[in-house]
Length: 422
Image (cartoon, rainbow, N blue to C red):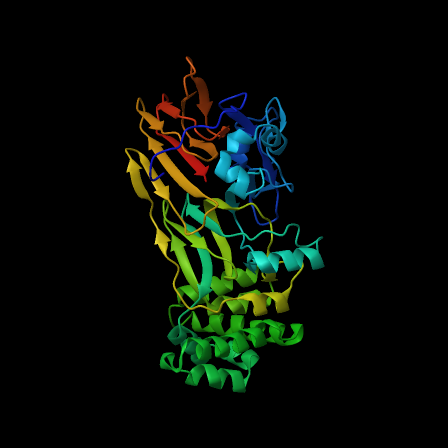
């Protein structure tokens, strides 16, 4: 944190470090059984007989969101504890975010593509929540950041105008659904015509594709798959074409298969990250990641999903910016610690890779933190506690504002920790 740390408030929370029990979401797209990092992390502190090999373990949620709230091992819900101990948030966080944790921390294990989606800005979130509270369960925005743990594949943001023109010229199935008028406009538009003109042409063409009839989409995908399978015998398919073949196997006859041609296709290596602002289209495709976001579960979906689709809302809310996402690699803030700082106020994420026998001291910060032990084992010592506490893979801790934390690695392997903080 930049600048001097202000003195702690007078009221002190009753416990300097709080071990959490965190919820798992079993969405159908998750990796199954032991193949899932989420399953292995949650199983490390479970009393049962290990992950069910047939069950998907998609997301581990660490936070206070009511859809899957974390609880203290001995003291009920974290959210209720924070209501009783607001000093744990620090005065600035408590005042700005209503006495609640402003971020939701997650681990994702993705076997099958998530939906083509976007998250609304604050104003739209409030409108959608008022109109359809069963679908849009809160009135908050949801800026987010994903940090790759394994290779992590993502569709994110609209491709550049030249790539989109190439799609219309080389993918007749997409051109036919967009229609001759909108295809001609997009093919003839020039960047010097101005950003708004380009966005207008792109919005019109994308909306035409996403709102095409089921019959037309089904016919187009059948033709596309037949053509690509035939052409693969005489030429090497592009990465995007191979992706489309893979998505069609996961979601047959889904317009999201065709929409993939419109987006940037990104492969993050472990340790690389990207952030996604409001109203930007994206879909996580495969791999495992750490994710942090504002405390919200608002998702507007339009493809690659059996869930409710709100196509008109998605097509009208998108920014239609054509920018390749910034790839973050973390900035070293001290030995063994890299920090990922997206352009959002609600959160930052630190990654700490601690070799065996080494110690790291995390200085007090004026906001709350949640720590996850991703791998290895060691000891956590909080503030002036005379004795440390054993910690191992899967442990999650809430640490109040203005609290110094020491981690030491004691096992044979590197101890890897992630911290989400505000």
